[in-house]
Length: 221
Image (cartoon, rainbow, N blue to C red; front, side):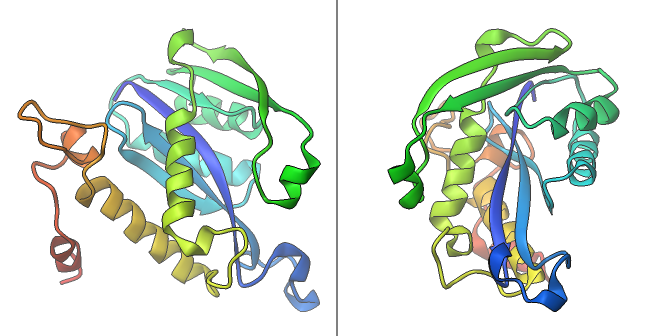
């Protein structure tokens, strides 16, 4: 792996933050929950993901988990969330080529009412550590994967009655999604020499065939 991209995706469990009962305010796993994600830009493998809050402890735990899964120096891109700065410095001890990509957005009040993303009006690439290649500074793949998760998992839909009622169920649903994505679903942009579509796990060299759902179920035995 040479290029990684990381991002965070919001969801909620039980109820939205504004509707949390008084006696459960501050209880983790009720209301806002954040999913931290890291993808390999070349193989499209989802390398690491972790549920937590959007706070320093979660950022640090996620980055240490990501670092433990790597065997070589990589280039990493994140958005402009400042929590990444200390977390990445602690986890990688500067043995990384790291840059932030900060996007600026216009004020589209109608878009906010529709739950639609605002229009991006500009980007700024900022090297943070090491020697990142500016041409490869991007968060496009991880943002697209987060969109895939929202589109394919009703639990992440912003306006839904299919949200997870328990954090444990939420975590299990995401685990199944990423297992299927990494091992079972041939990626449209990944093709072997024979013209056969391949999965992210195959492209990353950790699988030698397209898994079936039955194989995933077999892991429970």
